[in-house]
Image 1 (cartoon, rainbow, N blue to C red):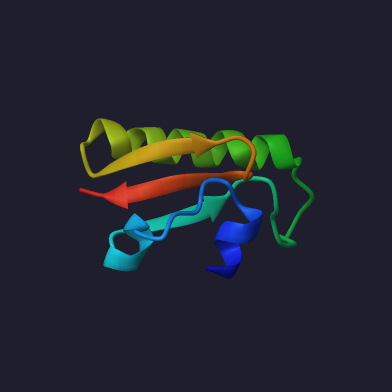
Image 2 (cartoon, rainbow, N blue to C red):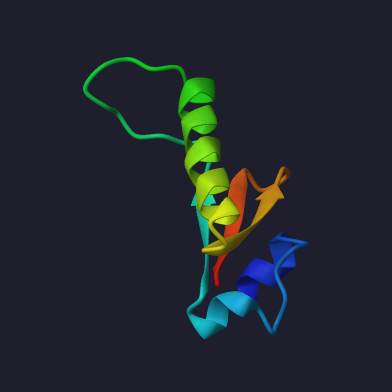
Length: 74
């Protein structure tokens, strides 16, 4: 309920409640062993998720305003 007040994408009947959907942020990364640009890490994440989508393992929605990928397991 609190999230719905601030996030226009949040709904009362969210698919996140069913345990098959989760979000992965693409704009915030923790420290790693060597410096890598965030856009490079985003590209690598996109490649991995696209491969999983092509294998029909999941559905993926790119949420530009939220800075994350919305992923539903198939």
